[in-house]
Every structure is written in structure tokens, then in C-alpha cells.
Length: 375
Image (tube, rainbow, N blue to C red; front, side, top):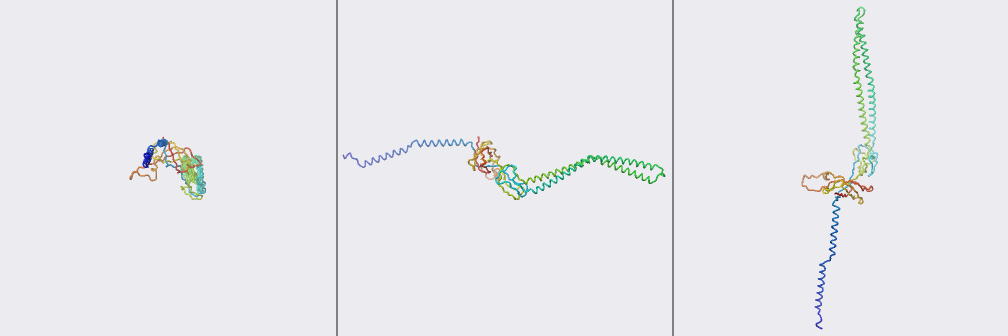
């Protein structure tokens, strides 16, 4: 019986051996994990590769930039006439149509100048009519004057012939049958007849210049016609200056930056407000490295920061022939100093084809993000 009993030390030793064996088994199990984590890791890697491949395939033909803004035609409206504003027919941000009257400047001074020019034109026209009547009269009068001068010449020739015959009779008779007084009178009458004939011939010479005399009247008519044209030009200028008192819209657009009120004294060329065209396009400043495959006609998807739900579609219209820095106020001088290469940005004009919403306007300068699909 004593040999079959075990001592406490033996029990402790067996317990320690069992504990050590269990620890070894646990350590062995930890060193050899199952296949489940490896499978999960493989799935994650495959999904990541698929996502990366899809992203590359979907973006390899897309060029985008956040350096893009809305643009449109905007002109400064300025009058060509000076004066007080008597009527202001527009409000801030009002849409107007081409030809609409926007501002009326006091027209009284220009109206007076127009009336004066109108009176000058009437006077010039009356003088022209008078010259034309004189020309028509001269075409009848001058030939008649020539005939009258020829008749006077014939009369003078007859008188001279009569005086010569009378002089001969006085000189051919017996001196006792006449007197010295009669001889002197016949001599004087002969000289007078000769003088009258010479005068008649001179009158015929003058009256024979019919074409020159008519041409003189025609020249007078031409001068009056020039005066009429000059007066008409002055009237046209006066009407043009009068029209400048009415400031009208050059095209459809929106009134912005209004700085004029009724009663304001404006000067010719001073700014009244700006007119912005509703035809909006996008100016996108792409990096020069993004222009390799970009060309006019490429489709563009446009998102607007101000209207996240607004999706616009358009196309590339043109690429500016010069980078943005080239046309800046102070362009860089790359030929001087130390040169550091900087990627340049080139403005690209994008025309909006569809997607515009009248309830969601696109003011100038809004930030947009275009996505150009290149081949």
C-alpha cells in the first residue's frame, strides 16, 4: 500500500508538464493562422486593382481644371453728348433689348442747332432755285441780246451810210449854195455815225459770247448746289448730335454697375453703366501639358460651383494663341536674370451648347469645372 501512493511533488510535476504542453499547443496554433485572413486580403487587393483600373480607364481621356470662369461680352455705355440726364429708363440688372432707350440727355441745345441748320438749308435751297431760274432765263435772254446787238449794228451802218452821203453832198455843191455850218454839221454827223457803228460792233462782240455767259450762270448754279450740300451736311451733323442725346442699347444684355441718376451732369465719354451680353461662354486655363490631344470640337461637361445641380454641356471652340502670362500687364522677361521653368496656362474658349436654365443665371466670373473628353 505504501508503494502505490504518490507524493505531492509528483503531482506538481505532472501538472507543470500538462500546462507546458498546453502552452506549446496554443503557441503552435498562433503560429499557424487559418486561410480566412488571406482570402480577405486577396479580395481587397483585387477590388483595389479593379477600382484603379476603372479610374484610369474612365479618366485617361479626360482633361479638367478648376481654373475656369464664365465670360461674356461686356461694354461700357458712355454718351457722345454732354448735358443733364432728364430721363433714366433702366434699373440695376435689368435686361434690355437692342435699340431700347436707356438714358435721355437734355436735347434743347442740340435741337436749337438742328433748327438753325434747317433754316440755313432752306436759304441755300432758295438761292439755288433763284440761280436755276437765272440760268433758264439766260438761255433765252442772251441769244435775244445778240440779235438786238446785230440790229443795232445794222442801224448804225445805215446811219453811217446816210451820214457819208450827206457829207458828200455838202462837200460836192457850190460853196455859195451852202454854208460852212452845214459842212461842219455833216462832218460831225459822219464822225458820230462811225462811232455808233464801232459801239454796235462791240456790243455784237459781247453779245456773241452766248456760251460763256450761259456757262457763268451754270457755274452760279453749281455754287448754289454746293451750298445746299454744305447746308445739308450741317443739318445731318446737327441731327446726329441730337440723336446722341438718346443713349440706346447696342445689343441685348443686362445693365450692370449703374452709376447715373436723373439730374446727373454727364460728359461725353463718361461711363454710365455696363451692358453684359446674355451669351455666356467658359474660359478655362489649362496647363500647357494638357493641350496635347485637345482640339476644337471636343465635348465638354461643365459643373458650376454656384449651382451644383446644374449640368452643362458644350464643346471646345478655340485655343488662345498665347499663354495668359504673355498678355498680362507685366509679362515676364525670361531673357533676364535666373530662369525657373514654370508650367504655363493657356486660355481655352468653351462654348455652352445645352443645359442652361433661365432660373439659374451665369454672371461673369463664376467658378466652373470643365471636363474635356479628348481622343
